[in-house]
Image 1 (tube, rainbow, N blue to C red):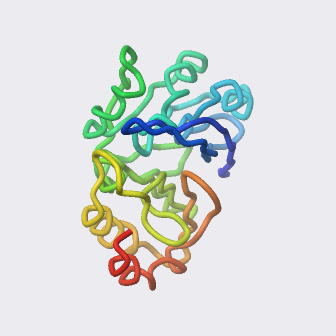
Image 2: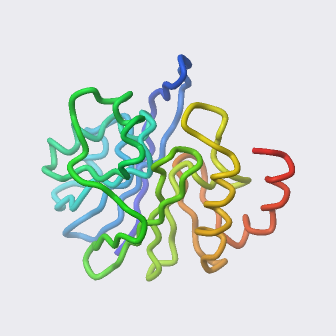
Length: 207
């Protein structure tokens, strides 16, 4: 079982603004099957990285358009369901008027890739339906835009809230083992141990 990263580029659009972004698309799997986390921007590039493996699902950390804009096209191409927490339907509809996710994600759900468990943690704040995916056996956590190297994801736009993301990070993420590697939605990796000591600094600065 291994973790692979595909970096794709495009735009993030919300509240009338547009920003150029690079996104991390994560593949968790082995030689036979794979879970895709966040189908961003380029279905063809993601499908190429998948190769001839079976895609079990396309799991969305949240529904900002830069994380889900390639999801329907990839789902059709590889024959896999799109999974999203229902609280993010309002954001999904901004990205896709017609296509709907095939199924929902809920706090405590367990996805399986081979013999590895992927635990779903509902971590609202950056988005109401934001989730993280914890893989205890591999000591890895996929955080989307909830936690980055240096602090929480942005909460200055619609459908986000800073106190809520702080509660999510404190209660759901910083309680994980400090050696847990954090694979983020943008930029480089970090660890729970590296970020945990800075919680009060983030609260004081307000972002």
